[in-house]
Length: 325
Image (cartoon, rainbow, N blue to C red; front, side, top):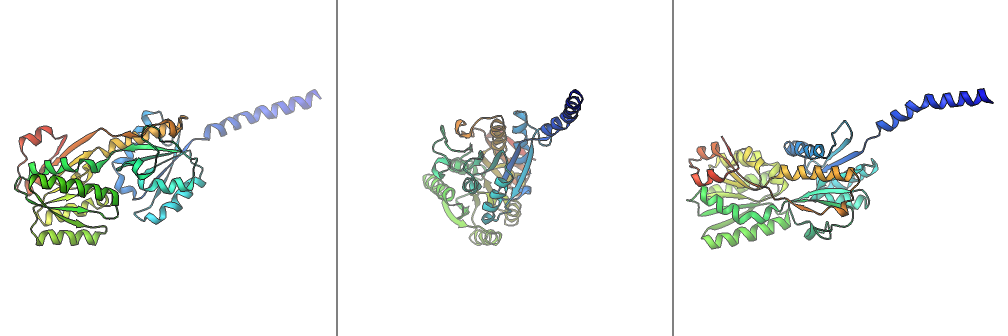
């Protein structure tokens, strides 16, 4: 009996390292779902990972990632969300536009979203302070800065009197807000606004052809993931038609647009990473209030300004967060 017990004990001891290794190999898995493609988030994914690092998590070391990209095909979002749920991820980071698909797929997996719209008005959360349910996130409210962006454009292009407002009708609520704010600000300053719509690459081409025929003085590009994804096309067309452009975020200016004023999207994604890290540590989404991003930046592409024959006023240079040479 003693010998048998000793052999059993010895066998159990031999198994301990295997059990320990198995436990060490188990890492939390973060799902990342986005309606566009990975190459449109080249600056945002590093910021997201930085936020995770700030809370003690590094991909491949103590956590794993599962990425899903809709490549602009929004009808694929429910299927991709369901894949992440079946994968049994610990938490899902996503854009507001894809958060609905995730919520439909699971009412229990924590979700951290980034939103350019009011998430309460969208119906994602009950309130900013007490989101409730399994969703919380970061809101940067890009559309509410439209009037200020128009003012800055007029400072950089003082001769502009007729301005094209390019909006994406599929981004309905933000388009409505932007149109309202821009047209209200334009009436107060005597500017004429010509609204142009586009939700495909061909429609962008057609919109620029119209503004060229009508000799409009500048283009105010509305917010939305579609225009961000087509930022190179927008910059090329602006150069071809020699027309100044203003954009809601920095990446469009880095691609060749003239100027941008709006929230720092990279900082918003960093904050999403921080929230995901806090969820991994056990905090419930319902206990994390929706954060409104407070970091805004004015970015001017000086090279584009020179190409257009514009001189950037010293007053704008003094307040710009970055001037791209």
